[in-house]
Length: 277
Image 1 (cartoon, rainbow, N blue to C red):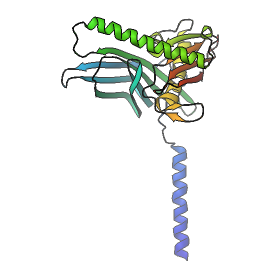
Image 2: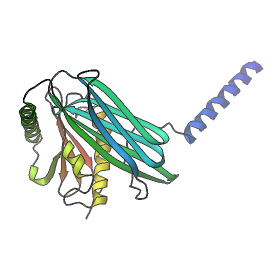
Image 3: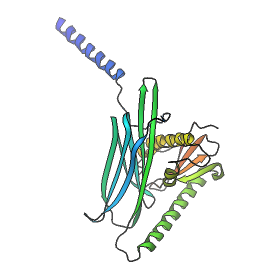
Image 4: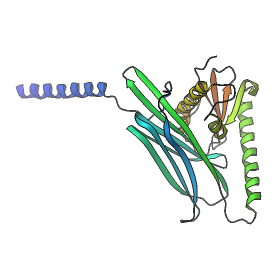
């Protein structure tokens, strides 16, 4: 009997010790969370590169790389690859106590496509137990992959026109479905937003732009990259979805992300932003 009590006591002590350890050292979650930007921290490099490979033939090499100017408590990179305006693949990775994230993927293609790759580079910095800051950067690249054609320029032009028509029809369908008044928003395709936001979005300061970018990608990561969260609670794989249209409210209170699933269902994500005049 005494032996049983002793074993029970040891078991309780082990469980208690484990619980205390978990409380003091919580598991790092794979997530992107926006915190105020630390102006003294920056990315030394932030790159996204698409390369058409000759060996093996019909292969694309997709690479992204980022290096912070110091080690961060948590580093995360999230990358999206679109072909002819629809998502075909994603890369995301996170590491603790590092400055560098690198990812790459090879894929084989068999038709004419315009490839657009977009990456968000993020760092979470813990100055102390009560202060958490962020650093962030964006990078992108695009390239055409064409099978053998004599008139490549004409093929490229037709491809771009087809993509633009498809996206406009999709976005207009979503605007009607959700009764969105476009005059209350600044609208940018995610690819265009990515380039504009490297400096300042029209009508916004650099700090305001940084807040918008951080809030956007926090929402994209949790509600799009990890699975499209639909209104009824279901989660759908984002592959095949259209390039999102980013709608920034002119009153600076929120932003919207408008996309369409592979099956043609309009999707609207809403993200509040803390930007005020």
